[in-house]
Image (tube, rainbow, N blue to C red):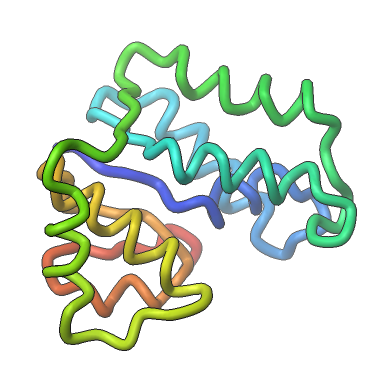
Length: 144
């Protein structure tokens, strides 16, 4: 099996003030110790670095070197792969979003969903119910 992780789980695992911190941290530890392929999109990585270090967004922002170290620990896993847009992405994005009213905060969700579809990754772990709009994804919430 292969899967991807949404940025919210990475943020909860880093934010010790979050009510989801312990569950997200344990989930990521399980991912790190697993053997299934873990796919991270560059968009997820950059969102983590942006939010985890942002003074106005993250309740206790991380120093940039710490945020990079956290991502590096995931990228160093032998079963972790990084995904990015491939040729044909734009048309696929238009196909994915064609019948949906995608705007605002849904744009990065649609972007991630399209990257996952383009690479054949069907399972996404997230605490964001907005991903249920994309019927080709198997959305799982490890925090419930």
